Amino acid sequence: MKSSKSVIQKRQDKIMNHLAQYQSAEVVTLAKWLKISEITVRRDLDQMARKGLVERFFGGVRLVSHEYVQTRAEPLSSDLDLVKDDIVRAAAQMIEDKDVVFINSSSTAMRIVPYLKDKSVVIVTNNAKLIQLPHDRTVEVILTGGEVYGNKQSLIGEFALNTLSKIKATKCVIGVSGISVKGGITTEVLPETAINQMMLKRCNGSKIVVTDGSKIGRERNFLSGSLSDITHLITDDSADPDELERFRAKGLKITLVPTRPST
Amino acid sequence: MAIARYAASLINDGDTILINSSTTAIQILPFITNKKVIVVTNNGLALSMDLAPGIELIFTGGEVRGNKKSMVGEMAVNNLSRIRASKAFIGVSGISARGGIFTSVLQETAINELMIRRSSQCIILADGSKIGQQNNFQIGSARDASILITDDSADPSAIFQLQELGIQVHEIQIESSDQPESGKLKTREASR
Image (cartoon, rainbow over all chains, first blue to last red; front, side, top):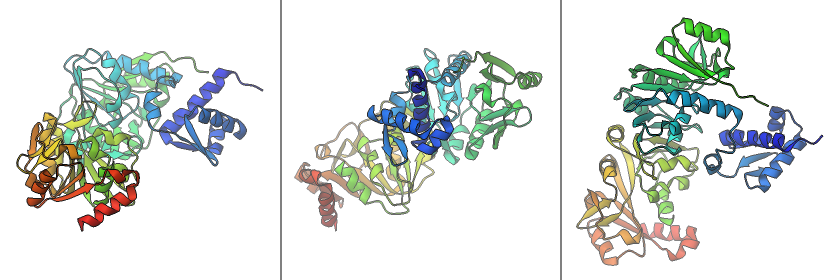
């Protein structure tokens, strides 16, 4: 059966997004993940290789260059990316002139930068990737410094904590891997928990968690803080309504953006 | 590139090195292979480079400036002042025996000065056109440099004056740059 063009395109975008994160992948793994045959995966990869996007090697595929991620970010946006953009746009509306804003190493949280146009703000972040995003002249970016951690390029350790310990922020925008009444705010990278905790501790104003609905009610490996450490949660309609109700009962202010139809 | 490649050959296993925000100096990174090295830099360009697994990359942090994505200011200085490095690799805009060492961005001056102070050995990277020049902002005196890596287009009398101060000068032959390996070997032998 022949798939329509858009289905193929979406699948290839998925593969590209995967590669953007992991640089390379095996045909077998991709086939299992996408629930398609290895032959179809190979056909996709060959097509992508002809476009010069990827490089084939025996049994797998790798990204041609890391630049791809930055230059082609637009056409790759998936539905989830659009939802995340809506979430951070809502967060950006809470940011005012003269704010000093902590942003953690979450890929969702850093999406807020382009939406801070015309606002005179200082961003303090441990997300090294953030400095590659275009931003308005009125926005000043300060990196915490620290050890550059893995592909995620988050900054961790003593230097990062040292910098944060000298700054008081008026807003804090953080992404999480999980947030639940039972488990609090959790993340997958242990050394980042100290940074997240410090950011929450050193912020006087609104402490905003931005995350898509799939993370609501979920508990991940490492604790970054408890619900009482934050003031706002911005997520989308797909979040578990019962859990949201329990958040509200705890005094958390919640903003919901619509979930886009996914295909 | 040839200058950066040669600079990388001076790095030993176990070194902690500082690299400043110069575009030439940061080119050293891809040439560091099979060594365990801690690299501390205020150069954001390091993010888009391929690093060998033995390299641990640390950012100074600080205010992010310009296309170069250099980190400057109080936070950068503060973190840097907690480090003692074996070598600093400083790309410069000018060096002369009399005038000293210069870089071109005012905000980066304090960081460059500090990098020189916090390392046992200061290695200056400058192509030939910068030798004998005094451009913009001074970050140290010529005597602060232990080693200068440049190319053979540099003014010989300016080089001679620097050598008089006790600076080891390595001139990379530009002509042989299409045969990088032999060029590298020549300069290495010359230095011994």
